[in-house]
Structure formats: C-alpha cells, structure tokens
Length: 260
Image (cartoon, rainbow, N blue to C red; front, top):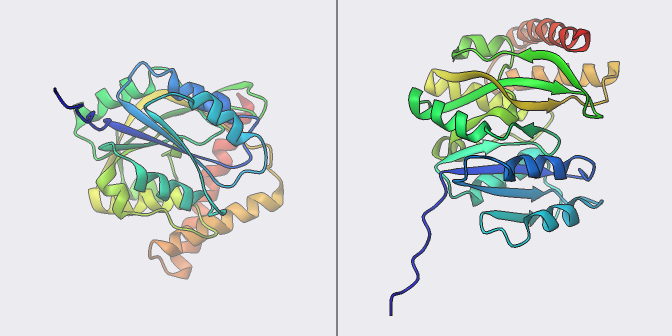
C-alpha cells in the first residue's frame, strides 16, 4: 500500500500579527484567502487579543489546510509576533500583511511574477490608502523600480504590508523590539546587505491610515524614527538630521493623501 506523501512546502508564507483587531481583521484575512495565486500559507499570530479577534479568525480559517491561527500565551508586541510567525513559516518567501490592511486579489500573483523576473531578494509595491472607515483616498504612494539604501534612508517607501522578502534573510534580520519603527529598521539592515530592493509600481496594497494623528502621536513617531536610525548605527547628530529630513517627507505625504 502506498504511503501518504508529505505535501511540498508553500512558496509564500503570509504573516499577519493581530491584536484587538475585531473591526478590521476579517477583511484583511479575506483579502488573503481571495488571492488568485494559491501557493501560500497564512499564519495569523494573535498577540493576546482581548476582543473577538480570535473567534473571527478561527472561524474564517476553520478547515483550511494552508492556514494557521496561533494565539500567543502572553503579549509580545508586533515585532515579536512577526518574528514568531517567521519562525513557523515554511515558505521560501515571507509576505507581511497587517490586520487592518488589504491586498488586491492579484497581489501575490503579480508580485511573485515580478520577483522572479527581477531576481529580487526583497521587493515591495505601490500603496493605495483608505481612512479608518474604509473610504479611499486618490493618492497613491509610488514604488521605485530600484530602491537603494541611500534612497530608503531618506524616507520609508516600503509599506510593510506590501513587502515580500526571502525567508532566509528575514530569519537572520529580526524585527527589533522597542520604541522604534521595527519594519523600517529591518528594511535598512536588509538593503545595507543586498544593496537594493525592487519596486512593483502598482497599488496592490491598500493601507488603512490610523485615526490617531494628534500632535503627541506625531512627536512619538518622530522619536521612533530617531530611535530607528540610532538602532541601525547612526550617532546622535546624524540620526537627528536624518529624522528631520524624514519628517519633512512624512508631512508632505500626509498632506498629499488628505488633499486627494
């Protein structure tokens, strides 16, 4: 009698951290499950949610062989949840999607085709934007075909939920815990190693802008940007100057979004 064969690992592992995301997580999960590209697994890492996130995700993923819901025993934070997801991943490629963002249904299909065409180690796409209620803006953040480390240092064009990166790289370059932009720090470290990222200039990601845009939060974000530059090796004065330049680009982007 022939023995059952172990199925081959998926090409792409999609990592989705979630915490108290009951208002948005179902739409995010459905945008993955609706992908025209099917060679993927979805790993939802619940960072000890206190709402209905777990029940919603468990219901959506019930019986699916290519999906896993995992609830952490104690809160670890976004960076920990993403790193933990990478440690569980079986795919050659890691794709990230936050639990309030959305993918176009052909995101993986078009993006993986682009990756194989360019032989990219890390890649990202253009981003569209919606407000907290889901209303779309007209502005699109374009993707540069070749994005260098020097260009990324000026501003972060690589929306986390658009990125696909080789798993062997992401297993080495962990997302840092603490008061910093952990994804930006990771991209800087990776581009310092690889030299470039390749951008697919199509808005295959829809990024949901947070409703918390108070001055206090903007100041906190600036502090996190400063901490990011410090984390990747810049001394205080260069990190401060880089933060000022980043802030100018960030304000311009927000104005363009809200004016569209």
